[in-house]
Image 1 (tube, rainbow, N blue to C red):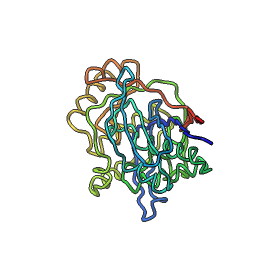
Image 2: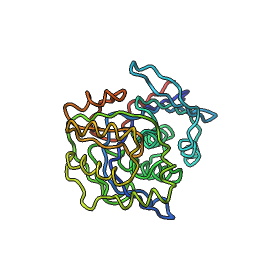
Image 3: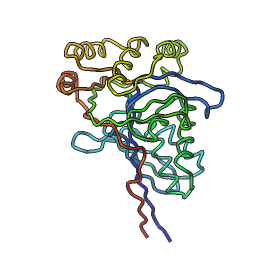
Image 4: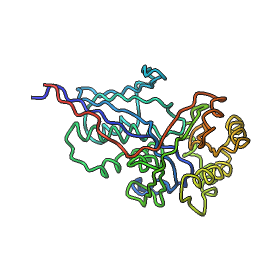
Length: 290
């Protein structure tokens, strides 16, 4: 008889460069079209069965030391209710939450996979993504991050949802990012005025590669009116050095590409060095202790 079973899953994050909301009364048909980067950093989830469900969220510092930042998560609690299971969930991330790195989606999708394995639900990867996407939409924590995080690479989503038309392209170059402050995603997604601006800003021609993506993402950010003074300062400095850069969507931060990007961004804060993730969620450990 198994006394304790622990599942560990990693799910990559996602930097959205541009998007257009697709809203329906049916959350399964809601989501967004757009493009972004599935990144090497993300969320590690540790799940184990427990008589009383609990969620603990940790962020690790540059030395890998964890600091607890929350004792709750509405989206993970909703997931536990939907699956009708009780578990202890602990998540770890290095990047900051609420800053445009898709960590809510990564935590949600990764936890779905962990619970699927822990409780032998026998759901397919696609079914896990559908459940996570539905919660993401209903909780206004995102629209397209779960769909993107199913796999890796530079992602172009032509139709909404995890079953949509998704093109993935790999590129080995490093991406650099700096964060100023968090933005509550729901504050933007629930603003009709802001969502209309975002729809109007959506590009008519989609990028074919990472270089075109950087240009298109910047044009989109400019057109949305979301760029604040602190972000403008960073982008202007990048422009002076011909460094392709744009604003993380939706977060108060900047991501950039190029040899001098790390040095320039370091003037404004701690720089995160990233690469494109080669894939989506993966099981790191499925351990049974008798």
